[in-house]
Every structure is written in C-alpha cells, then in structure tokens.
Length: 399
Image 1 (cartoon, rainbow, N blue to C red):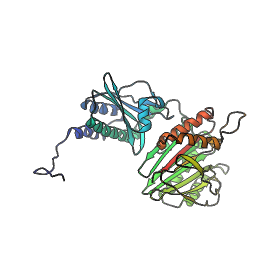
Image 2 (image 1 turned 45 degrees about the vertical axis):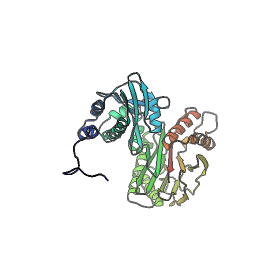
Image 3 (image 1 turned 30 degrees about the vertical axis):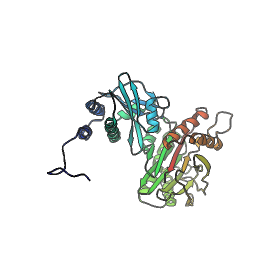
Image 4 (image 1 turned 180 degrees about the vertical axis):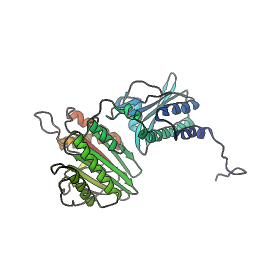
C-alpha cells in the first residue's frame, strides 16, 4: 500500500510528466503544420534526435515521411521491406543499433487503428526510455487524429498519386480502416485506392454490440460515389436510432429510391455482432455471401436468404444468425473481388479467393495485416486489373 507523504500526495512534476505535458499543453491551439516541431522538441529533451513521423499512404504500400520543421525527411519506405514497415505491420516497437545510436520505431496507435510510425534515434535505450517513448507515440497518434480534420497536410502526405473526385468523397466517408478492441477487431481495404467510387463500408462499436455495413453502389465515378454517400448516411441514421437490422434495410431502400432513378441500386450487407456472446446476425441485399474462417481455415460460406438490392423496393429481409467461436473471423467482400477477369479469361472466382485466404491465414497474424496482404495478393493474382471496385472487410470475434 502506498502511503502519502506528510501534507498530502507529491504533486511535483516528474521528468516523464513534463515531457508528456509539453505535448498536451501545446495541443489545444497547435497549428497542424507545427506538430513536427513539438514532437522534435519533446524528443530532444529525452536525448533523442532525427525524429520521423511516417504515415501510411492510401494504397497501403508505403510509409511516407511527414514534412515539417524539426522532422527528418527522406524517401518513402516500403511497408513490406523495411524496419519501419515491420513495426507498422506488427504494431510492436523495432530497435536497430547503429553507429550513431539506437534507432527506435514505434507504432502510432489510436483505438487500434494505426496511422503510421514514429522513429527516433537515442544514444542508448533503457526501459524508462521505452516507456516514455511509447507514451509519446500514443499522444502523437491522438494529435494526428484530432488535427486531421483541420488540415490537408496529412492527406497530401498520404496521397501517393492523383486521386479522383469520387475517391476523395469515399475516403472522407470512411471510418478508420481498422479497429482493435479486447473483444472484436476489424480491418478493411478498398481498391483501387485512388479511383474507388461505389464501394464503401461503415462500422461502430456501441456497448457490447459491433455494427458493420458494406455496400456497392452501381456504376462508376461521381454517380456511384453520390449513391454510396446516401446509402451510408441512411445506414448511420438508422443504426443510431437503434432500429432492427431488417428495418435498417427498409430505411436505406427508401432513402436511395427517393433520390435516384428507378434503375439505380446499391447492393448491401448489414450485420451486428454481440461481442459478449459471439452471436452474429446479418441481412443480405444482393451481396456475395461472407466467408467464415475458423482456426485459420475457411470452413464455409454464410449463406442466407437475400432480398433485392437497396433502392429496388424489396421485401423486408430475413435475419440470419450464427454463433461464432472465439478467434473466428468473417470475411465480407464485394463482387469486384471475385468477378474481375482478364480479357478472354475466366473470372477470378471464389475458389481462388478461398485458396488465398487459407494460405495467408496460416501465418496467424492480426486482421489488419491479413486484410492488407489479402487485398494486395488478390490484386496481383488478378493481373493488377481493377476495372471494378474491390473491397473487403475482415472481422474477428476475439471472445
């Protein structure tokens, strides 16, 4: 039991509190372009130098240095073939002894999502340094998150090539690509990252209930992006007023039908997971059936009755359910993932998708790494063809 000193607890500022407090004190009115200066000053007080903030690009291929006073620049680093990338993929610090000290890479984690990596060099590293740096990285991740809505700086850093207007709309609509919580984890990938139009997804964790919707609006370009925006907006509204899954479909259907021509539609799939019991419920409106992955192997499709796509005035859908086991994963995907084909050849197909899932799952990695590798592997296996949007979302019930 800790005994308070005479006169009450010691309220004097420790060295570690002073470092973290410098970031917190500056955060409220800190202009986004000065984030680097605050980070550099804080790291320097710890005896560190050459700080880098590396952000994941939208294509999820590279880590790009954030420009700014006090920050070290340099060329983008490949996620798959760099020490910073290893830190990013494992969400664990990576230390590299060198001639000028120890280079430490720390994951920038916020609610399980990972914006990138913080890299710092110290002459030597002990457990106190590691603890303080881990907490600094956590504050920097939060700072990037809160400042992101106030600037284009982070967007420009992450954009590796020209992006279509439709893709700009879709990326502004999306929740974080990943979330890891004690009972549930989720990760999603959109391809082509810089030209996606009709595909989108949304999720929320409300108490013990995890909600997810995946949609695919017909067509391409701005028309598809506009329709996807209406569908996701209607889904969020219906979810937030806590109506039943089958009624969410009806709400979305009326919203899309009321705004677009009768031949316009959105395929959709909505689910909810009780993270306390593992009970998964879902409704299907024209989407491919999800795949159930158990012990790192696809054990079957979650087939269910379907109704018409959103916007066609289909019947209220039947709710299907299944009990998951701890560690089970469910892969949701749009038809672009399996229907793509090269000229004169057969479609990529679900069998190939399952084969690649089984192969990548063998490594027993987190859902974020599996989802990313699966999307990139499938794109390569399709010959790099992306004539249609191809989106996947991987959900794990952790039990």
